[in-house]
Image (tube, rainbow, N blue to C red):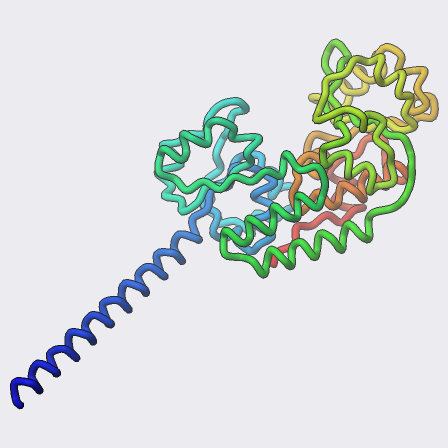
Length: 324
């Protein structure tokens, strides 16, 4: 009888010890998971916008220089840690993999269109890589779907739903009906060829929601066209991104063959977006891109200056990044 009691007591002790050990392991894993969510590296401005809006800016240990410049323009650097590392990325070159490893990130986030084949190098270094595909989005619905996907994967589902709701409300208030013909010039080459936005990219959706009709919507992606294409399209409005500076951009536009015969030129409806915040709004498919609809709408309504710069955008559009 005594032996049975001892054996029974021993079994109870063993079970209690095993349960306690399991409990400690669970706590450790939970703490580890919590620590991991607080070391994020963001390598794309659109992704950095999303992270800050999800309230995760404090967990970002490193960002690319373009992300930091954008957050700085908005005067929102307080959303990032004071000691955040600013990574100097070069177009077409891989990020400093060894430098990323030294940051001990729990997750690295980047745009699939930007990182390309270098994603394999990051994964081979043992880093957890989350790729977003907003640069390939064809409309705002795909952008918001990507945001919900990121928020779910990073443990911020409710914040993601609030952010998407905020974006949809802004789009509803900014959008309008119209058919003003628009030519959007992403980049003008020295030989006067230019890159534009086709009908299956989200810039086309911006133009449509702003009350415009993209004259190159029959094109796909971001094609390179000759100046004769612009002359034949004869748009009512031309919107061009700044190339180096405003003087050089105006020189390029004014010397494009056939430009003087377009309605946009004859009616003085040519607008240039400065290289900083205005082009960020329309090029970066993140939360701030909703303001690009309002910006283009103002242009089409002839309610903006011909040179649209950061000061105008910040003051007249009251651009701000929400934080949930």
